[in-house]
Length: 537
Image (cartoon, rainbow, N blue to C red; front, side, top):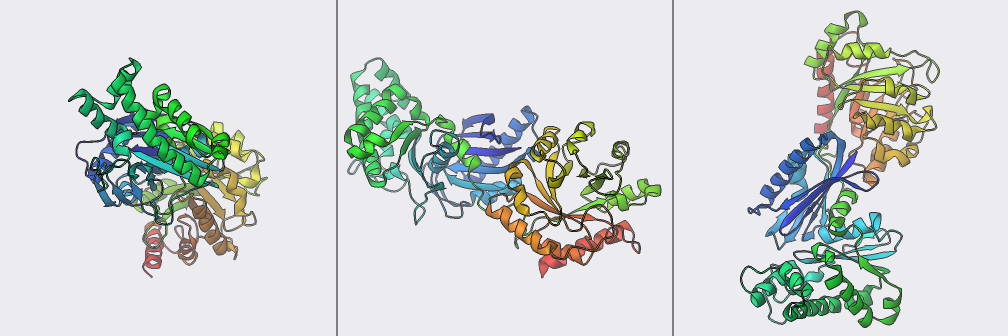
């Protein structure tokens, strides 16, 4: 499973998929479109993502979330770009729009804060208490991570180092002021200086190239820039006293000409106690720090699978063991007509639960008769022995019981490696907290609302409270994408209550979809209507 990170800069965007080891596995960067309208840019990014996924044979279903770094101020909900000077965006509902066009849960974060977070969780800031990361690209931004949290400031505008006044009545800035630091020190500002000194067509890169050759004008430009930024950094360090200062962004690659002399300047001019103990260096993730940080930043809380009242899109998984086995082909056709989202198969071994399983051969034969994805519930000891024998497909879900093996993470990994989606199942008496260490490995949490093994049981009364606690727990931890499935007495009466509590996938059997007094089409329609009525009330 991957998390998508997108770093949108003033001139280019960089996107990549980050795996659970916090490494970039697929990456692509290109120029921001000439049309800077925020909706157009987001649409272009999504089209590019689709191309990248196709070229690398990756399904979007393997992406669980998107984090997007933007070069400007983000509101406290981490969903709206309040002001992005270099792109001309104001009050842009970036997260909502990207969720609408991509279907991916999306959170946005100021790019410099994303870089700081990336270094804190996956770079040179690991193990530090207060990390300051300065991103020097087209503009300049500063991210701060303090005590394990991104510091936004009371008004949400912390880290705008690039807009510190540096030159009185200087160059106009996109923020509305004049003489801002980034207009002299960052890529855009150095580019303006290059044009003024070396003529039309010159760029910031020309300054560095000429400085390498010993050009005195270029060296002087860099020395002035280092002094300007150095003074701003000295003030920052003396004020907040971090134990880690890092530099990311395009100019951070200029180690010998810029980063090393900048660090020397800071050490020479900072308060002595700070200068002696602070760790200073270029960011380990370099230009990719904002991408990695954006991908790994905790999600903001809204999810595209929710309706306005906070519920996820309801889905029905029809329990095949409750179907008419002598007329299964007819039942399958009716389930397709009813729009059943999953076929639920209970595989049982007679030991973990008293019943015996549907044979694997039967699953393979049924596959030839329907296109409905499989939802396979393994109620067996040693489920790892079954996975290699199963012919799974990308849209399938396979649930393994926490109680069935001491190596549950290994089994979940085996499932995910097949291309199917892994899920964790918990018995009624198993605490939801048992799932904590494998949340990154699953797309669904299956809560048993009866003790597993037989159809037709009454619901365990505590189930509704457990569903609600599980949904809140997952959301509080930032795992909004993990869906909750319930299995056991999903009746016409209970499903609306289960949905209200926070479940969204219902294993339907004899008490609803396969009700003895109704056909599958009528029973499914009734169940969906009851859920819709619950949403409206």
